[in-house]
Image (cartoon, rainbow, N blue to C red; front, side, top):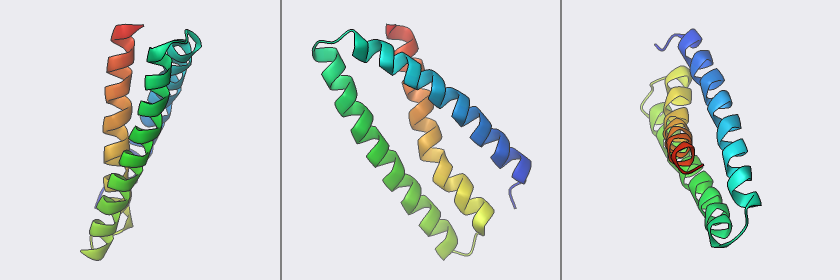
Length: 94
């Protein structure tokens, strides 16, 4: 059983990272050009892929009887990886 405090902490950190990524993306998009268009396309495709991966992971956890806390943690994992990767990538380029 995952401690709910850890899940809450992960969500809080994800929220902070996501806000930072949004700010970095807005700065990049506001500059315009080909990079802005590419960033917009990347943003949409990454969200779809992370949501799909999270859905599959959560469904597998529930189907195998892992419980809702484990399903929530597994659903969150691909989203956390994507957001953190974007934070690192965008921090280097801005």
